[in-house]
Image (cartoon, rainbow over all chains, first blue to last red; front, side, top):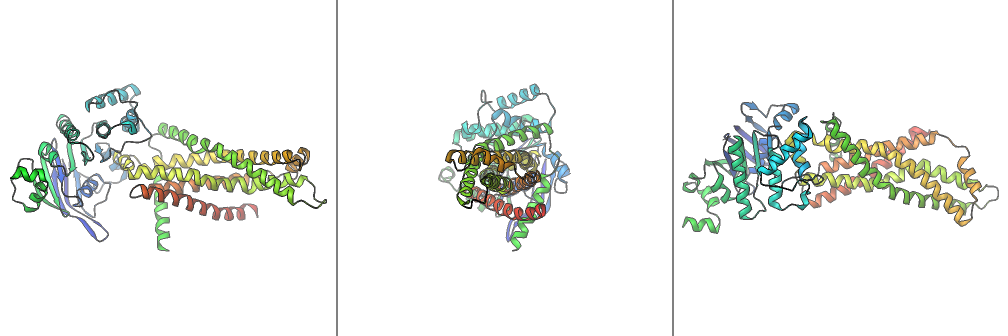
Length: 248
Length: 247
């Protein structure tokens, strides 16, 4: 479980996160949704420590991440996997080297064992015979899947996904969404997904937090989101032609 | 003015992160060898080309200016040797490497920054500054002296070839000029300068790449800043080191 407690973050004069308090539960796919510029990416970066919070706390299963020193954070981060918007695969390494990278850095396993783990996680994300391809030779969906494989290679306890569907067609988006959900349930991990894709919300949103103008505006799940009377959330949910037709 | 101090402060803080113990020694050695190859050995061609032609030009210009019969023709070899060893190879070649290697380092690290590859390293718990910049600094400090000594050889060889080809100075006179009054300390001076310049090129370029923020445009700007500031600092340190080592 990850808990964000009274998080505030400002950039110069701009107060981006305003007293955000939220619990992200274990074994569930926790979605953070909101319009562009609402602060959801900043919230995620505060949760993983890429941004320091101005005040407030981030707690990973009773461990206060905010007060940890560099070495303590380094240890905790070995329990974290993250899928970035563009995949963030290392350009100079092939698929196998990318996925093996955290194993090389943090374990002393023999090469054979590491290779077995690499092939296992690549199989888990439905990728075969791609070990020696470079990131530039992969499609967008394949890059995301390799990034997921790299993120779960170290058997993380916490998985963060920043806009996993951006730049993907609806079918591939669905594949990635279900893969994230399956992995979350299979390994009992705490997953946080940052998205503004309503398809994702309705298919994998075990828990949904809506961020509006830097505040936690609404919290619910994929069932309750369609029946709320929250005006700002309704504007977001039914803001597209497709969803507004569904409502009618 | 305050921006300069902010930048210097950021540079010092980054160097604190860079100069820490590598996470995995084996991976560090692998990276070091890769960097020696990509930053150093791949520069051999351009270093050889520029050195040989500059040596030839210095020789021809010196021979052209010797009009008095009182000045021996061996002065051409002497001038080529002194100018190549003291200034041309360590400083001018370092400036050229600041352009070639510096822009490469800044754009490589800058691209990794804007495509979130550095964030990915940080999330994994890797000290990204140490992992990315430290092998580049050590590689350049190790390989640049080799490149500079190679440049000295090529410069003198270029000068000799130009004299022989134009029949302005005989091989005997040229070689005599090269050997006359040679001081080994000049090589020490050149290598010392080279080591300082190698550190400047790699750390300044690494810094500008690492602090890149934005997209492709900013990567280009980071690359330009890396070359400009590396070159300016090299020129300043050239004066300081020359004053310290030769007087």
